[in-house]
Image 1: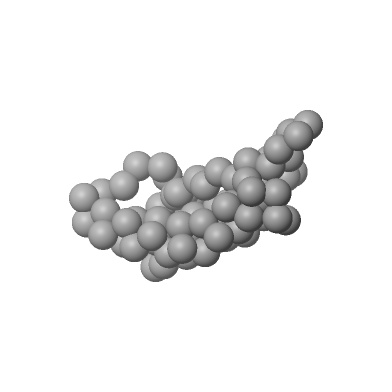
Image 2 (image 1 turned 90 degrees about the vertical axis):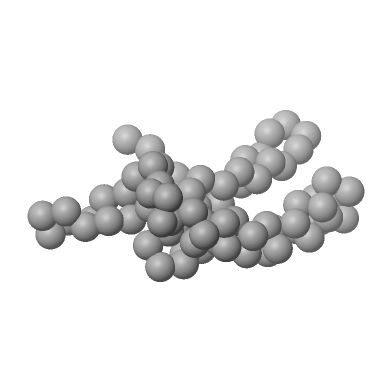
Length: 81
């Protein structure tokens, strides 16, 4: 079982972004996984499939995450962090 946790999480409504930081030998990579949260039979689940009605929230969240991460990833890429 994978016990690793995302380094950061962001959420707008039922759309969530999990940010993962991967450190390789000589570089750090940042990836983002988007998911849609929903409740079925009293239990919470997540899906990577989005309804057309979710797309604006997904785009808003992606833009927000990008604004948060772009300066950080640029400083890591340029060797400032």
